Image 1 (cartoon, rainbow, N blue to C red):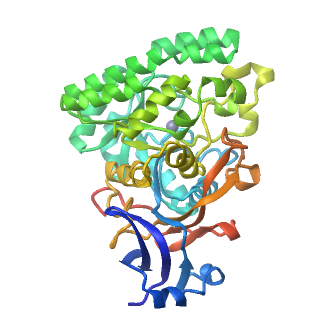
Image 2 (cartoon, rainbow, N blue to C red; image 1 turned 90 degrees about the vertical axis):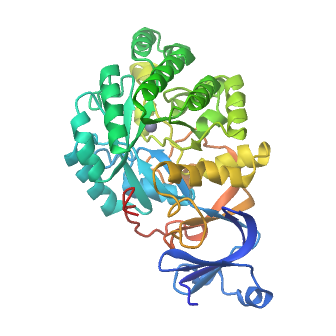
Image 3 (cartoon, rainbow, N blue to C red; image 1 turned 120 degrees about the horizontal axis):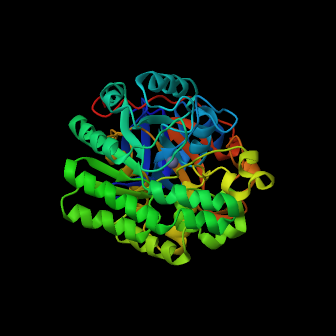
Amino acid sequence: MNFDLVIRGGRVVAPGGVLEADVGISGGVISAIWSPDHDRDAAAASVAGSMNANAGADVDARGKYVLPGVVDAHVHFNDPGFPDREDMASGTAAAAAGGVTTVIDMPLSGQPAVVSLEALELKKKAAAARAKVDYALWGGLVNDNVDEMEAMSRAGAVAFKAFTCFAGDDFPYATPDVLLRGMKEARRLGLLLGVHCEDQALTSRGEAEAAEKGTIRSFLHAHSPLTERLATQAVLEMAKETGARVHICHATLPEVVDAVRRSRLEGVNATVETCPHYLLFSEEDLERIGPVLKCAPPVRSRKAVEAMWERVFDGSVDLIASDHSPSTLSQKNLAGSGGFLKAWGGVQGVQTLLPALFTEGVKKRGLPLKRLTRLISAEPARLFGLYPRKGALQVGSDADLTIFDPETQWTVKPEDLFYKNPHTPYMGMRLQGRVEMTCSRGRIVYYVHDAKTCDAGAAVPRKGSI
Ligand SMILES: [Zn+2]
């Protein structure tokens, strides 16, 4: 059998377990996985030099893991709209450098917001022109576009996102009546509805008070645990009423995860996501780091962080996504003009998702690596209808994979980051485990020794057409 690329001797994390194997790639898909025989192993001396040629090349992965590419279900790449913050080129380059081979891009933070068929078509054009890894797109459910959902779904939106609280002037939050109608429509169309859960009345009142004080504590008070718990309960009740598939985005609290778990026992079709920053940082870190770690819902108490890890371990959390939410440095540093409240809310983290979770979850806390790949590859792919084409390292799947060196330690520095604006709360953090190479459909889109290597990716056809 002729292969375009063979990855030799790595510890392959496949759906059935971790095995030492060679992986053969042809035509952009994984065409064979076999135990390395010694002759072939010895012949695999032609390594790094031929990697970028990427035609009939061998890559030596001995001592490294070969992981299924990460499917990041929650990124904001701002394209079209705000290329000074991020665009599809920089966002997906950072993704590739972090072992992420599929991103699912959110409908807000770009311009126009993706709340109409027309806006979705613009986003598709931007992604097709500039993305370096594969992508799928969320559509937005706002207060006046329930009727647009079907057309957007037909045009490729794999899920819809709604807010229960203020999200920006161009993305009006879904009031309860709209959310209920949106859920009925999502159910009719067989679509997933992801929801940002914070109570509008409480957060808007709290933000008004916090605007006067301008302190981090007043911001945390405005976005208190109660606001997140209340909104989550309301969404789960509506899902129970309508039978819609709902997904609680970026849960920060064990009580929220538990509420989803309880609702599932009652037959509610609900899943829950958290993000690395809710598993690595606490309120004390927010006081120390400042606006770069500002996000909503905010990071929580150290006790909540520990309790979230328990729920990652016991299987209650369905998936982990970055919620990569870019901004310029000046949008983060507004200390002179309104303080913390005016600073941009959103954390940049698509590039550090895998190494941060490997460091904190696998190395420090003993999370099995196979479980981690389930949380960041298989489950998000499954939830958005992309599995097993995406999210699985097995014969017949797209050759989306990353070679990960578990031993290398590195410190996050601005020059490592592909973001347009290299700020992140992970800056200066010592991480264990480094992405060495990333393949998107068999093409090398990132290689650590030639960090600017990138190639063009293409859209993932929407659910149903795979
Ligand atoms: Zn988000």
